[in-house]
Image 1 (cartoon, rainbow, N blue to C red):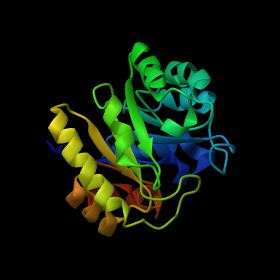
Image 2 (image 1 turned 90 degrees about the vertical axis):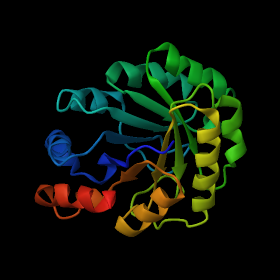
Image 3 (image 1 turned 60 degrees about the vertical axis):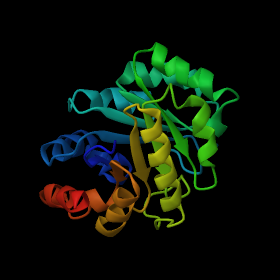
Image 4 (image 1 turned 180 degrees about the vertical axis):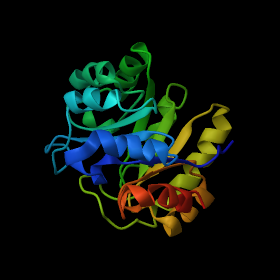
Length: 219
């Protein structure tokens, strides 16, 4: 069953010189969680934040931290991000030899586990782990950089995952990340998404605009 639309601002688009204040501002503006994009310059182009940044931000909000690990190998770093304050840890099945084992590691640490599908990653990879995960994240751009355009072909994938999740009978978040703006947000939600990651669309205009930006994404 599709849940209400929740907004997860990506701090990748925030002011990195004032990240603590930015996290406080999006919380005050009505964000549902904080999306943290972790990139290693190896699994994806670009390098972003390590566990120390997550730990430093943790004291600035009680909102859940939705940590998307775009790193390989992924397993050695999962405990560090959990210890730093992650509430949800999502990984790419291509980032390790044994995705099921990686998911079990996250669950053993008492946190929610997610699987991330790149634009070319098939829906079928979710089936073997549907009973173990709490979130599926569909990348509607190729990961590595913010500000890219939404790939419309992913709408079919979102719809297929909606059916798979509903058939499982489990409460699993269906999240979409990449090129989200008020127009593409509507398309993603119509296809079955209930959680939207947005960077530029939330952080444009500065803190005074964040509440209106988030409201616009909810539709």
